[in-house]
Length: 612
Image (cartoon, rainbow, N blue to C red; front, side, top):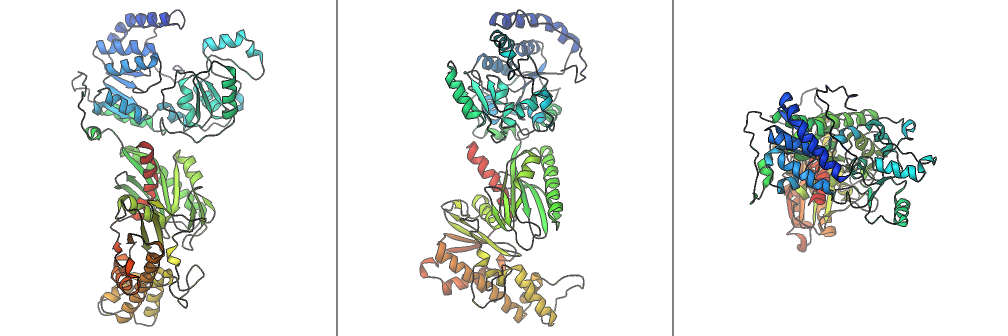
């Protein structure tokens, strides 16, 4: 395989002797230690890359360490439960730099007193190949299988290899092996690839015995620890065969190789070679010692608005690391293609920015089924956006988990994680923008309702004979207080030459909008002031209804119009609300991008719960 990949092979060493028993391993290590010094003296490598936990890797690491050659060890810190652990950890103590696959492995390395600044959490390099595998022509290789020499001998002894449903082979090329496990009904054995690589496809695995019992696994792995009876294995097969599990990303996200290359380039070959250990006591926040190497845990956030489509990389702390904005296309095809394109570009940029993308969160207008990731019905502002599955194309393209929810719900989640709702058990968020939306947090959880229609607060009716609303009813809050409603009233005044006052002008190529109405009101236009007062009163009556219905401990007004309504809303509460709820505070959100932050919080909240 190495020859097929066109590597320049400088030296060939024959070190494996007398089969694969314990004595042979010891002799093989000894033979390698005898032969390696001459080779290393001749090659004089700057860095020796040692992979895994085989006994021959231990010989290589021992030789390099004694000859003062820098060692980078890949896949250290893992636990399997056999002699492999001792070999793996021995190589760790000899190595100067470490590339690990999982967060647990990283923590193990730190606990083993390895230098924090020399550890990279990259993921498993094989996942780069696994997650990009596109070959669908797998029937031609389905006849091949992977087995050890001993397994092949046992199968031949039992005559199993002559059965048409069995095939015993010593080796399957990696590209073919990928397709084999991706389309298998089940994988059974005790190989590490069963608990590691196979998880990338969600293929069911039955792990026999205790050899891999200490490794991290996805939910696709079923352990049969005491596999001495046929019945247990058969029962496991009945449970596992033919199932399809979610793809596991425990061991990587497909970007390990770029991270490793970046890490290699950062190594200063002039710094002292002496290996460093970080002995206890360990600092309380050890991550501060490796910030320039460890990636920032982040989410890709997508906000589908009536005008713009925005994608952002958002950190665990709610910082927007980078934001991308495009006009939202009018057709479904153009829109979904643009979303995919922007997300792929952002994910690639995230690697350069040292950000680990944990998943994708999407905020969109309309009624959303968050369980399935489907937009059921959209608002009139976003065309061709009904019965749209957003989760599948994004997940298939990015190989990441995807969450989708309504923009009002996202605003509430943003306040819960990053804003003024943090730590509160019950609060309500009202968005005042082009439309009026909202979200309800009750007992720390978001309320979706039986048909995902909860918190349509913009369509609370506050007048029986009010103006027509976009929902088909009339007298809704949105018909009075939304940006669309204010724009409608502003156009009426402008058409009657009653909008502009001294100090105001509207360019001919500029459409009259809500901001012009607000500007006129500030400059003393009595009619504009009256319209804003009516809009604020309608919103205030809606808040009173919310207070009487939900009795939250806080109401948060969000969006571009919130600051213009806050005082009127509070006046209405004093005049109209029951005395028992008049002390409930109403505030203006201090979040700049609640939709993006809320979309990100869906990803980050889930990740936090799983890690902590």
